[in-house]
Length: 103
Image (tube, rainbow, N blue to C red):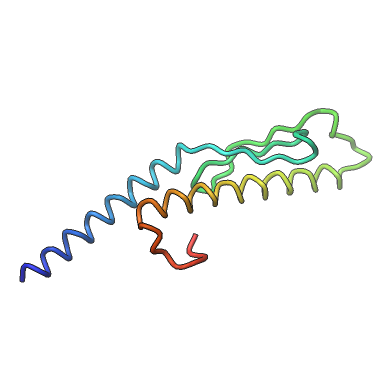
C-alpha cells in the first residue's frame, strides 16, 4: 500500500511541477524577426503571440505579399524560439525523459 501512496504522491508532485512550468512559460518572452528586424513577432513560452511590430518602411500597398511573407517568417521564427525555450524548461522538469516531438 505504501508503494501506491508513494506513486500517487510522485504523480501529484509532477502535476505541480508542470503547473508551475506552464505559469513560468507564460512569462518567458521571445522574439522572432524577419527582414533584418523590420518585422518582429513577440511570443511567450506557451506559444501565444503577444505582438507584432512592423517598421513603416516595409508597408507598401504595392507589395502586400512581401509584408505578408515577412510577418509569416517573423512569427515562425518566434514560434521556433518559443518551442526551444519550452523544450529546455520541460527537460529540466522531466529530466529529459519526454519522447521526441512531444512539444
